[in-house]
Length: 213
Image (cartoon, rainbow, N blue to C red; front, side):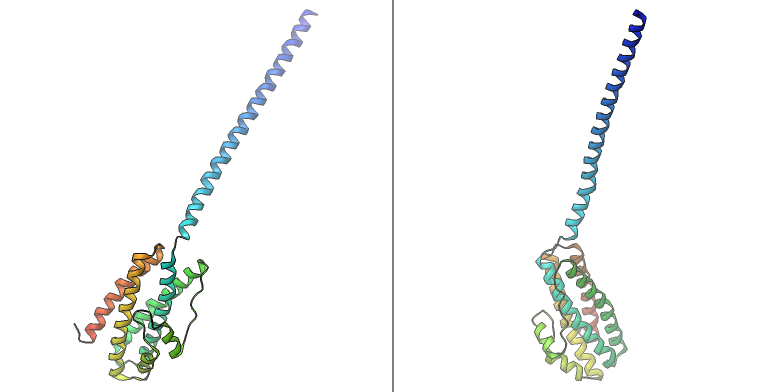
């Protein structure tokens, strides 16, 4: 009987110890899992939140620049398309092709920014009235200016186009410099920098073509 009781007692102790070990293991597992989940939440959510904040990091200067430069570029493209038909100089035609090729994609890019910011993309305004409504921006031609350009031909057109486009580019450079100083959206300030570089070079080229340098 004594031996039997001793065996039963050892068996009971073994079962109790095993149960305690299982409880401790389970607690350790739960604690580890909870720690992993918290770490996962922090590592997964923080970078995403930061990236999201950076993606929307723009201000009113970026919005104004995009809206106004879209209109400014549209007029430059209109002028370039006229030059493709009316210019007598191949050099002027080539320049017009270059202007249109650079500014069309930039219009699409800036339109995309405005849409992503929940802003309206400016409507296209054709005709003299549309040009007059936008002529308050630096370098923009009035409806009367555009009518004169459309009616010109030959070397007269070439001179008029180059003279107007120099003024137009100077206005774009002024607008771009303002964006570089006041904007906060990286891609917009980068585009502004590109505008300054490209259009300053084209101003020099056109002045040379006009015999001014």
